Length: 253
Ligand code: BTN
Image (cartoon, rainbow, N blue to C red; front, side, top):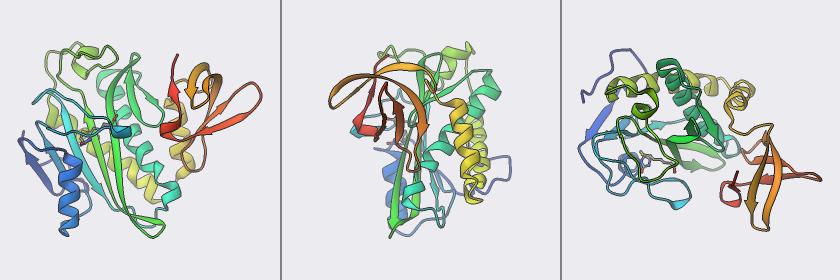
């Protein structure tokens, strides 16, 4: 994979490729801690030996088949309460590219799993370094299944499987996604929170539908209304409006 983008983006001015690493998020974090913290720094790899997912899960990906990368953002002035917008813009950017280039109708399963035809195609892990109540550095880690043709998990899929294309150029896709993140990030920088949220709602899987969930007290039926000001999920049951953090709810059916 080559290391420069054709389009002039402010994200991706610095790009580093590693044939293998534990986790691109951890590698980028290491560089930030050594003071190498240029906004837009992208680190990508062909293989992660300790890829990290949300909720402490592992992110497993076949070597040389998929996109595994992290981008450093430095969203000046973004409060911790609004830091979930970083997840939203990354998810929206991936959906935009997948829909535009492959004709998918992708969806975002709260908080930010990207789904195509009811199966997960990409995951996002945002890690932040805070300065008081504000986000100083944010590492946006993205794993997008591109050319992998088989998954042991029946709930996973790839661009190749869903598009039925023989082979997808990963570097082209990386450049398109970075360009789309840049566009969304500019909205965030101009504090267009409502615009981002309404776009997220258009993509939000199960929003406005009745579904079954599991929380600490057992199963519950409810309708996803949206998210609150800190990114918690809002579910309306027959008699109350409930709010959930990521670890507090499981989507059943
Ligand atoms: C999820 O659980 O859905 C989030 C998965 C995020 C995986 C990506 S791959 C690149 C980056 N490095 C990591 O260790 N994780 C993220």
